[in-house]
Length: 157
Image (cartoon, rainbow, N blue to C red):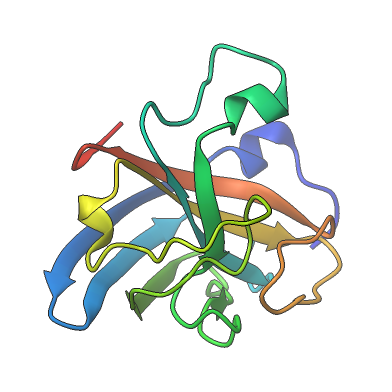
């Protein structure tokens, strides 16, 4: 796709469902308004209390309580890649198993809780890859955040 207008880029709708299972968290997202047939990746970002600070412009302050982030599904990034249909719709499902966070502040070795609903704050983020290339388990500058679902204390905000 060529250039996008702001209206085209911001016209995303979606819903997410989470279910705690014995082996982890079943995550299911249905999205529409995405860039048709573009490359996307889905990510999980976890914060301890008091969570993400949206009142500051300083990214280091805003993310001070970050535990870590990882691709949705397996930590190697093999399950978080998807392409919307020609109409811009996508259904993304994965089981996110408890694991250590491969990305995050130095020295972070805390495992995720058995169910992501037990974390203080969780962001589910979709990265749109401008160059149509996936970078595996790392969120690189070739992607921009295109959508997000944010859960704080079991409620989406």
